[in-house]
Image (cartoon, rainbow, N blue to C red; front, side, top):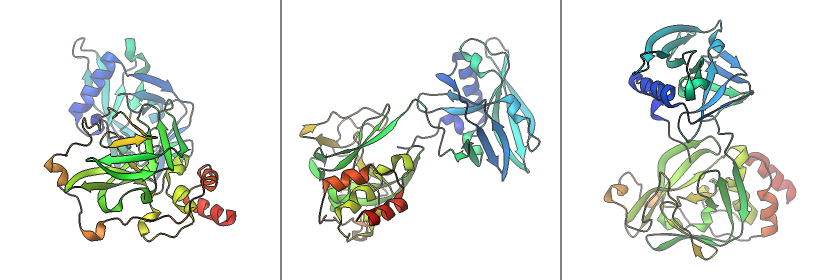
Length: 353
């Protein structure tokens, strides 16, 4: 799923000072120079171009792009020095807060590290941290960076599986299928994406929640209601996933059934349940509940009453179940390996048939 922003992404100077002191004292978790051309576009102007950027892990989850100080020497960019940040023990200056200006638009809370950092913080010397969200568009080469920089040590694989899978919530089977896409992402639990037709549509409730992931795209959500109790945002899907994860787009499995849908919601992507909040049975074996920041110690226990808030339960928003008319596993295998987005996929499908 989409990563939440680090608390240091906000405009609070105090948080910025804490980050600078933490990194200068303990060093980042790791750093990695990147030879890719990093470009920043702001206010319609390319203000920075460099092949000397450094990926810096301020925390374990994903990196930030730090830029060399000399990259700020751009005629379209002006820099105004602000407060200095000092080591609380040695009183040595470790960083300075800058405000950048381009085309009369300011970019505050830019952190410029000193040139003489030592120890585990040496790799940050003369590097500049610009808040990712403060820039209109970041580019790797000529490709926009979506949400946040990707972790080069992370891999995402999407594999077709015909192992039977069941999902239970509150002790009730709410989904069952023998055809699914298994998504394996480094450091995270396996995720099991299944057609909407595999889910009991009477338990689904539309949600307004949206999140973004740099590897998959923008996710939309459903909540689930079982026995009068609600599990909020426990199902998600990607209507138009990023190309590298195109196999979780609904067309790869739904369209290959050669049937016509009764519901416009067939156009959604394959649906996935939070392993941490439900019980999943794969190939006859109940899987152990993974422990992540989304964990629920007892996935089949009734959720607290607060979960019932802000969940649409009107009949008009209940999702109808789609009954497939035909399934051909050989066709599924062919389609699942086609690396097209939705429009190219549909064109290819028409030619294939």
